Structure formats: C-alpha cells, structure tokens
Length: 94
Image (tube, rainbow, N blue to C red; front, side, top):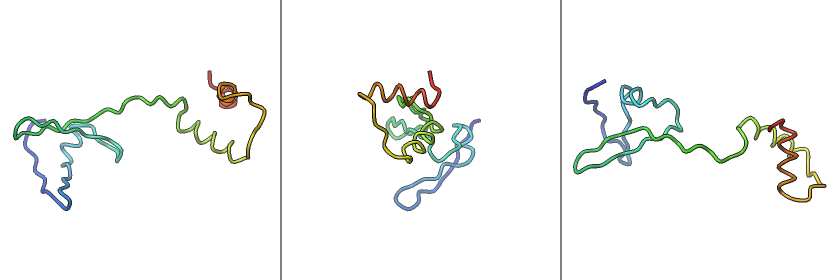
C-alpha cells in the first residue's frame, strides 16, 4: 500500500495512527509497539517486535502457579533449583 495518510496532533502532542497505517504495520492490540526512525525532517514509523521473554512460564502456567501459591506456603525444598524442578513437575513441563 502506498500513499500519504494524515492525522492531527492532539492533546499532549499525541497522534492517532490511521487505520490504513495500523493495518500496513500489522498492529492489532494495545500492547503492540511502534518505533520512529528520524532522518533530518523525515520520520518513518515501523512495528517493533518484542524480544522473546526469558520467562520460563507461559501466562497459563503463571495462572496455575498463582492458584498453587494461594493455597499457602509449602516447605521442604532445599533451594531454588529444587523448587523450580518441583514446580515444573507440577505443571507437567520438561
């Protein structure tokens, strides 16, 4: 898609990206991130892909962990490695 799309500067110098621009960049959700590349008096807008998370658990697994934590404290682990191993076993992870 080619063309120029206009958007007015709003309160706090904010700009709403026109629908055609959001579609061209594949922006769909509130958490999507855009970057601005500035060269002289020109600015390009691009979608920024987030870095993969180093989090060892998915959102669904965190929900299970929170349920487990709500049951109260658990004792008997000798350290964090053993705790993580047991938690992964409880979540049925490799």
